[in-house]
Length: 185
Length: 222
Image (cartoon, rainbow over all chains, first blue to last red):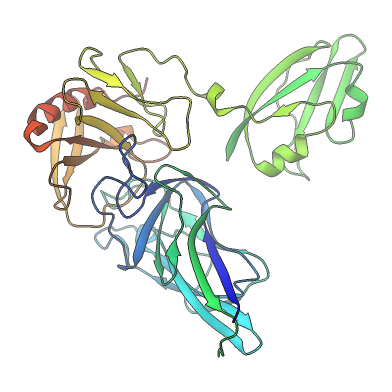
């Protein structure tokens, strides 16, 4: 058995952690926030907001992750009229061993503008980054107060910096592990 | 995008060595030089730089990427990523609350009532909040760009000339009342609509709220 670790890094290259499981309140935050509960779009675990604008990338430590399948949804901010603010991109992450591709876990990115991936698209990675879209530089009521990326995970665990910590392209947000001795599809 | 400061020390004795990577033009042996800086490895642009005298230092701020900085980092040209502290006001006037995340917005506060607990030199793990002197748990803190997806109620309050949207949440700790104040849309900055948290002990909430709203009503561009 060989345990392989896959990290998912910040989708924004120059950002700040502004939300964890609770909202980050400057000067009064514990690591995971001290405001009210930061709810998710899909109801998955360990919501993280990375404040910042610009391109959004799915970033992983290739080649530990070798394949991503992306799914487009509309699961954030249901009352908001802006489709970019509502849009979600869910990425199923796979490793590869001599038996095939192994599902490791999933990450959902909320508020994805101008998506550069499509629904059901298979991406066989050749590097650790995959452009998925951009952070909408707008506001939508109280559901989107400024450019940021909202993340949630399925399986794995959270390793994100504490509130107000910096988030760069090498900042780990989630951690997944898989046994590459397992038999996969 | 990050902000860098390039400091070019134009020393006539060292100019030749810089030509390989950056187009330095010596205009005259004793009259100084000009510099062209690549915005990308293949695109060159010439910022409006003054003619420099030998040993004169010129400082210009611009936006650049890490790659850009690396490209510009060549022998004999001193390129420095300016320390954060020098970009941030280090002498904030008492009575002025500078919003680090929502720059350049500011608020005014009565320094006899409030103390600014901000650490203006530290951008990472930002500390940027006001504390009410008589009520240690009464504070005005900053919330960066986010999404309020969960259950809450909204009300609009008029604070002076500003209209705030106030969010109340059902799930906060029993020993604290915290409400989120979303600023007037006329004060949206590059990073979005400013959001603040006002927090206090439940039995002091009304006092704290009243004082905090006086401060919030002064939010403005300088």
